[in-house]
Image (tube, rainbow, N blue to C red; front, side):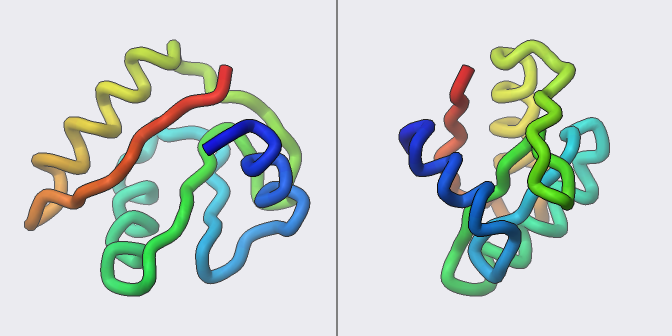
Length: 89
C-alpha cells in the first residue's frame, strides 16, 4: 500500500476495514484485530497511529516489527493467517 493510501485511511478514521494501533507491543490486541478481519472481508491494521488518528510512529525498528508480526501471524493464531505485512518508513 502506498503512503498516500495509508494517509487517506488515517484521515478517514477507524471503521470495519481499518484499525489503528498505537504500538505492537501487545500482540494480543493486534491478534484480536487480525482475527476480526480474518473472519470478515479483511482489513488494514495501521501501527503507529493512535485512536484519534494522530501519527505517533512505531518505537520498534521496522525490520524487527515486521518479523515479529509475520511470525505471530504464522504461529500465534490457532490457524496461520495469510496477510501482507508492509511498512512505510
